[in-house]
Image (cartoon, rainbow, N blue to C red; front, side, top):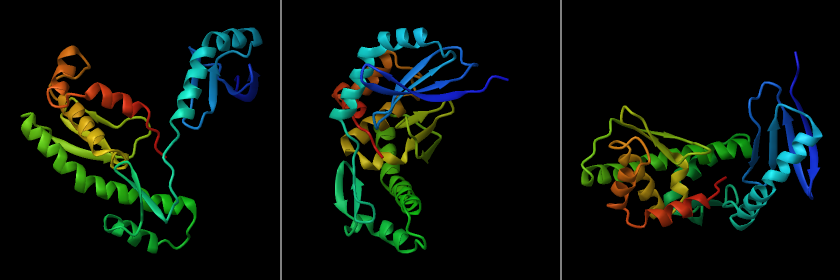
Length: 223
């Protein structure tokens, strides 16, 4: 059985992690939020890899520039909290629950502290997002079956064919205007389970600057 291999390669002053998986049907290139470049292929041929990277060189550099121009939000754990696009001291009234979680941590390592933040954001999401979903559901005359909350790495929200709206607990970290746009976006899927012109027209009828907000969302990297 042929095993996967991982190694570092250099290409045009770029350091790239190359993962070779013989079972892959296609090749993939990705740039992480921290600027790490990963190449996944089924082959180890130097010629093949060089041609592929040459073809994608401009795309890679565009992604790296995007990462550089849009660094992730940063805050000091235990001292600060990120709410609605602003960093505040944990002493604010809104972070009382977070302070209580932090006070109960027996082993104050980063992992346990981050768990406190995740629990806090999920709790805050329930309190803030549910009323916003109900508000827009009423004015859009659309009925959902259930609201769920999850911490997600690549999606702000989703809507299932059964009418279940799932929202990312990390939404609490971004501007309220962006939150409302995402809620309307997901509710609109109750009528149009696609991104057709009719779908975008429905979103625009409630969020007129939805295109601008969508571009702003693409530039946000959250920890």
